[in-house]
Length: 226
Length: 273
Image (tube, rainbow over all chains, first blue to last red; front, top):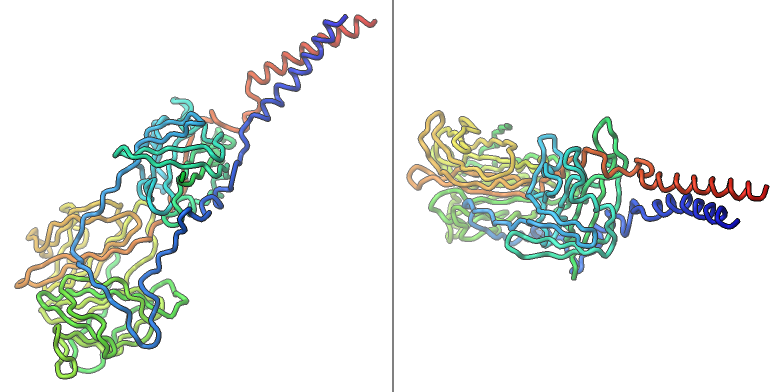
């Protein structure tokens, strides 16, 4: 009787194959370069740290002094980003400029279909520093957020940011990491100097139902596409 | 709000005056100091000499130098009307043995005292970090005028400031419409002017001038005092959680497979029996 044997074999294949395939196709918690290294990697055009003023001249010589008018000036207008897309992972979201909450955390749009750009930091496309865009991974009423697929981002993925004037900046993902929140290198992620980078952040890792909070941040770092 | 009274200097011909710049909080290992110079005496271009050497020539009222990195030490400062021969003239303002300690960041302001006498006042700049989303606003009274109130958006934020006092406050970043009134009145002496208080910066506003020459504002900005946000929240439902165990379809399919395997095995065994 061959049918029972076939049923046995098929059953075993299903019983073993299904969880195995599921486990294998889950995104790894980390891909590419660790984010701190990705942030620190040299820019394509090497950035030389601006030398504050002049080095003291030898001997008693005094430095050249340059004077400028000190009248109040109007701050330059920054063109904000308005749309984020990561086509390979199906991410497409409008961007709102955001700041910080009274407690000091970065503000995120209530609408999980929208993402926030940290408007106190560099704008995507600035000469230096990390432009940070973040969003909720989900919400109890609204479901999954626009950045939920971020944990599947892989090195090489293209990211496109459109600005309010219609111009775009293009980026290549270099690293993704899931980091325990207390260990998130906020100073590096929000750096305002150094090589230009795009930093995408959402939540991930295990969910604490009591705190209604995720343990980790999913962080993706991208560098300008040449 | 912090309020401090800097060491005021009398216009000097009376000999050595110690102009002591309080050491900045961060004790820089470098043996240099950072000094900016603001010319806030109306109508009079000047030449500035340090240790007998010309540091600035034809320095115009209302202008500010870029920060100068100077070797720490003592300096004899003298301010002359532009173009005169320092060897044969008396300085308009003079300060000897000015101590410039290593690591300090200061602004030396040539301005009028309350009664209209030219003076040099050193101010120590507070470059400590501000919280994420905040900016530091410092106002310095360097005008030949009595006590003033400084208002932002029509609300008094610094009351009763006298020459050469300064006051600092931390405010949410943004643009404010600032003006200066005679203390306790709504008589506007200067402004209003829009001030951009960028996040993570310190903006120092000087009220300067005189009743005859008019009153103006001068602005000095320091950047890089920002802090990072304390974190990034990002989800509240657990829909994207990583440890929810096996998703239901996976469990169902696995169970189906196990059931089929058990059924098949029983048949295989019974057919052999």
